[in-house]
Length: 364
Image 1 (tube, rainbow, N blue to C red):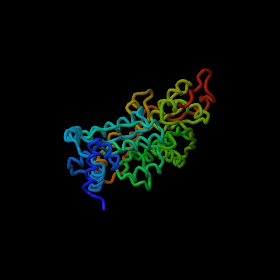
Image 2 (image 1 turned 60 degrees about the vertical axis):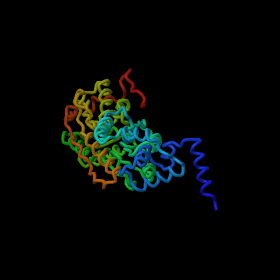
Image 3 (image 1 turned 45 degrees about the vertical axis):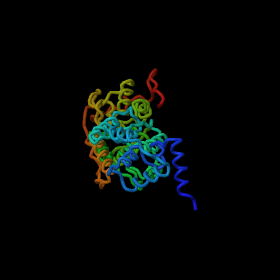
Image 4 (image 1 turned 90 degrees about the vertical axis):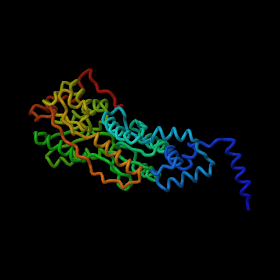
């Protein structure tokens, strides 16, 4: 039978040679550094199973908390992480800002990571952040459902924003994209439009799936709908217009406002008037939508409400409280100057190919 006294002596000598860090304990326990700090300071906000994991890892490693470090950690506050597809999109900025304001009132800081529209990078960033934060918010994640399930198995606090994934087991806060896009298409049909091109967003975007589904269902209004890939940015919207005009539409329905801004710029370069020759719509109602010329018909996707609700759900999870049901948030359609009734001369005014010296740029 091993000599327990000798074992303790050897363990103590190892600890004296190299001080075990809180980072090592967090990695061994599979939790954030802030969670280890709260457990060691006796905070009651940590779930019992996490307390057990942290204390077991600390005992096995011989970790002894530094009182000064504990005081510093408790003064700084806790941390949440946020991963977004593209920080250049003002839509995501407003969601994050609303979350940050709400989280700050509870003493939480925020770490933000930009995935650059890359699902693999998005998963890697999420995995890394989970080791540093108490909770994670994934805003419009592009990663496949299988990757979301892997994250859900980490037994940590994760909330999805604008991504409904069946069978993943993660709470979701999302906008009702489908109903608002159906309403936009109904508006175009009532104006007399029949040939519509949908400038589609990223293929892996749940919001794009919902918006495209709505546009295709709008054929019930008598619309003939065709789709052209257009991404999620101004550049990609600009680049998609020439292909869209070859289809002779009377209206372009854009995935989001940024795509619509790019499309508007290209239409103006080609001498195509909006809305006289072609009507144009966006989605999200970011601040610039009301100030372009003509102002953009779009759907107001309430970013601040999303951010506030995302924080509310995450905070409930981290506090061990029961998570409230979160119904889809309604998006209000806003009719502005970029849509009007089509004219009989519209098809004749649309160029069949780019005008000389005005070739569209490549998609970035």
